[in-house]
Image 1: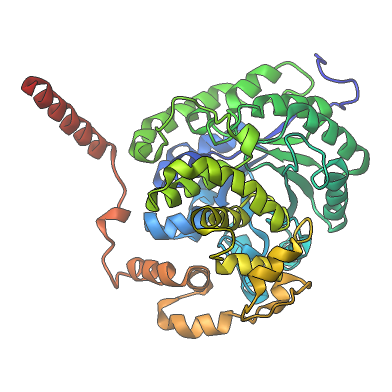
Image 2 (image 1 turned 135 degrees about the vertical axis):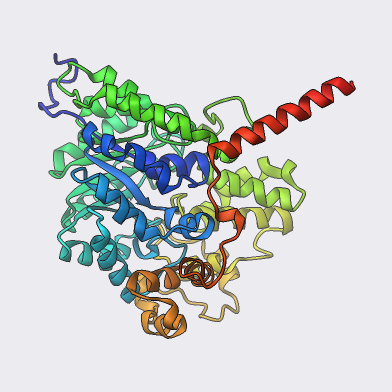
Length: 497
C-alpha cells in the first residue's frame, strides 16, 4: 500500500533504537545499569533495528562516576549478546565524550580503542557545526573501517526555519560539506525538538536532490511535535529515524517506536520490525524502571514542554538553569534568564544550544541577569570568544568580544584556525600521572578524559579503595522496602490526624 508521496521510492523506513543511551539519559539522568539491559539484549537484536545507540553522550561520565561501571566494558559486554545489530554512539567531535576539546593524540586513541571495544557507527557532531572539529576523529573512524555519520546540529534563528542564519541554504550547504568529507550517512540532530513538521518536509525534499548518502533524523519529544515531524519526514523520504521503547520514550526522550511501527504497517515504508518483541522488551523496561524512579522529573503534569516552542532552550539546559538559580535563591528570575539566553546567544555568535555550548551560553546568561551584563565572565565564554571551540555561525559581537577578552591571558585577538591546533599533546603526560593505576589504554583514556573522577574510579575498579554505597545498584527489593516504609509512615500520619 502506497500512502506516501509518489516521489518517495520503495524504501522501508529504518529505525534506530536509543533506549540504552539517549532514552535513559533524557529521562533518568543516564542512570540505567548494564545489568538491566542484558535480560532483553538478545531480543533487541532480533527485532531488526538499523542500529542501537548504546554509548556516548553522557554515558561515559555517569557510568564511571555514579554507577561504578567501566564505560568500555559496557560495549564489550553488550556485544556478546547483540551480535548482529550495529552499535552506534554519540561523539562530540573534538570534545569526544567530555566537556572540552582534547588534543589530537587523545582523539585518535579514543576512536581506536572505542572501535576495538566494538563500536560500529560513530555519530559525530560539533556544537558550532564547525566540521574542522571532526577531522581527527573522522580520519581514525575511516582507518578502523567504521561508519562515519556526519551530523548537523539543528537550530533556529526564529520560530521557524529561516532568517539570517539557520535557513534552508545553511542546512543544504552544511549537508554538502559533510558528504564531501566522506560521510557514510547524514544526521540532522535536533536537541530541543524545535523542528516543525513542514520545515523538515521542505528541508528533506531539498536535501534529497543533492545528497546521495542516507539521511537520518534525531529529535526529542520535548515540544510534542516529534511524531508529526517523523511522519512528514517519512513522506519526504527520510531513511532512518531515532526512537525508544515506550517506557523510556516521550517527554524529553525520543518518540515511541511501537506506534510508528503500527502506523506504517502494510505501507511501502513499513519498517518490518517485530511488534510483539518490541512489546516484550518494553515490559522488561517497565519491571526495572522503578529502580530509577527517583531520577524522573515529577515537577509538572504535562508530558511536553510547550515553552520550548518559544524560548528554544533544550530540556537539559533548562534543568541546569533552574539548578543555578535555585542555588542563588533567584528561581523567580527564570523568565528573565530565558530572555537573556536569546540575547547572549546572539552576541556570542549564535551557537546551536547543545553540549557544551548550551551550558556555556546558559551559565553566562544567568551571570548576566544576576550580576549585570558581562560583569562576570566564565573561562569557557572567554575560550569560545577567543576561538578555541571553533568558528561560530555568525561573528561574535565586536563590543562584547572586546569586553570579554580585555586582559585575557591567552590574548585579546581571537584565533581563527582549527581549535585543536592550539592544544599540546596530552597522552604522555597523562600516562606519567596515572602510573601503574592505568593497566591499559582503556584505563588511560578514563584518566585523560576525567582526571579526578577517572582516577577515583580506577581505584574502585582495582580494589584500592572501597566503592561507596552511593554507586551500588538499587534493587527491586530495596524499592519494595522503601514503598512499605512510606506506606507505614502515611498510615501513622493518618492515625495521628
